[in-house]
Image (cartoon, rainbow, N blue to C red; front, side, top):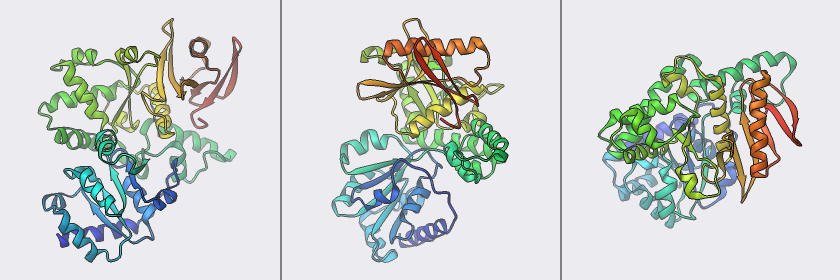
Length: 414
């Protein structure tokens, strides 16, 4: 066991020696570190959770346990590990537990460490950490920081451009970068080398399906699971129901389809957006719209012959709203009006609707503009909301219609 911990210390020190981009987050990581509560960093695989934890702890005396390590899991002995940590990291102030959800009954062990007064930073790639394990055993004992792939702003940071302060000579490059981001997403490893995007994300997608879903949940029919995942990534921004998916894919039952969909959400791979309705039972029955955590997965795995730039833009806007702290089924929805006009995003604050957002890649055609603005105005009247936005690829102006002002803004400014 001590040899494993010494090897992991070498791994920690090597990781700390690398240069990293400082991520933009909703919370100040240093303020989080000052809290005695557990610092929980969640998000999909390979989005920089471990890096964020290391940057938070850089310059501190901290112990490191990486549970994405079969040798550690197979020889696990909690009491022995705690004794060895004192030898390998004398006088440590913090413990970083990386990908801790791989450890059986991790939540009970983490809870015992918390009661012992250990200052913990933990990372995990599974949304279930928040819904069941964290909620039942660790309620009120943790603060959460969610990491997603690079935002457009961070993608520009990486390319040494300030998205909000572009010089005239930089605008052509900025336009090319925005298009690149829209098509290929913002996974940190792919940002470093764009030529590897498709092969890297193809492999990562498969790893999430097999390791984080099939293996964790002991799924026997992996073919159906994989077919469902490929269908979802090929139909982002579409309204889908479990009944429809079961019939289209020939899956064994609606219950199995629902179960698989939940499994695919757990590792932050897919999100499902409900239709807004004040009546909860009607909202639950309506089809949900599906989104994927990064557009690069569409390029890598979708079986469509050509990319739909409108869907790619809408998917990216959705992920940006998640990044800002909106949550599906709580503060973020889509909407269909009484005349069946669709609004892409309804943002709610408390009991009232605060903003309606429509996404349209190219609104140069007058018929397209009429369709999008008619939907917004009709929805605005039904939902009593006057903050209306249309996000486009590169257009910016204000439209006045039926007493409403609609802000048309490019994605780079949204």
